[in-house]
Image (cartoon, rainbow, N blue to C red; front, side):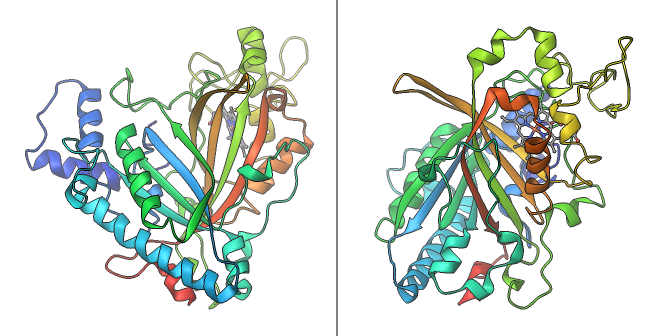
Length: 402
Ligand code: HEM
């Protein structure tokens, strides 16, 4: 559901406010949740990357920047400055909100909206800063995939800023503020705003959200209650060189355009075969509930597999990918039309301990197995960032790099 695969801390924090009497009780569950989220703060918890602590926000903006400098010592200097400014401001914004720290801010009169800021470092930053020796092995470049249709202008980046909240104005104003602070040091390489349905609109806010293809997306995901969550999602770096990432996570961000005219030309039952799940309730074909285990061996009366050989969930299943797992948090994007072309799709983010055994292992299966979904999507942007854990009242862990 909305909370699937995410720490309960964000919600717990918001409920704390409710218990303190700040929230008027609403009889409907979605009223409660929507209010808690929109009024909540998302102060990061010790030792965890903030984006993984909060429920998936309904609004997000991922911005990748490059530092302006070219000489390694100057790149280092700028990286330190930007990380310090963003680290300090993130703390202020989490605690006080923009309106309290900037006079005349656009967010005056708005609740904090669970604003959450997450910072990531790209491999290009470490290489350009002369810190190749501190580059953790999981921060490897992604290999090329047959299905790639990447535009270099939509890929990579020295640093990532991931801003999420329950309100689009709060996100926009925070991004503007944070980028304004570092204008002298950094230029935006690419950025992509995304969204999910809001808790206030959902008939059942705990239900797994749908993407713009109409599919329930996010069902199979590691959950923080599960023993596997730590090993699969959080990075373990006992080695000295990469210790700055111990307890962090690696995020793979992909801009995946959807060819929705072609998709909706398919009959609904054909769309179900592409993924291997029912459109109505997200149950695996042949199963009766969303959380039923897909029966990949089942065959129909015609002797054909019930879940097709090239169905997305068959190829992405742990059986095929040796149990590779990542926390997938998908957002929709809709940028209208550009040069007459529809710019709409999935802002795919996947958080894992090691992209080589997470995203890359799965994407390779989807590629080599000829994922039926590939006809209806185009991978246009790609990046990997190291997301260190947050340590309260301490400088950003990336400062250990210098
Ligand atoms: C499952 C959609 C891209 C990995 C699913 C499901 C849907 C879906 C509807 C079934 C429900 C669920 O478990 O969430 C999409 C769409 C994509 C896309 C529309 C692109 C626009 C990707 C990519 C990866 C990926 C790029 C990783 C490389 C997975 C995994 C599962 C999954 C691991 C769970 C499989 C299992 O049942 O074990 N996806 N997906 N997906 N997808 Fe995707």
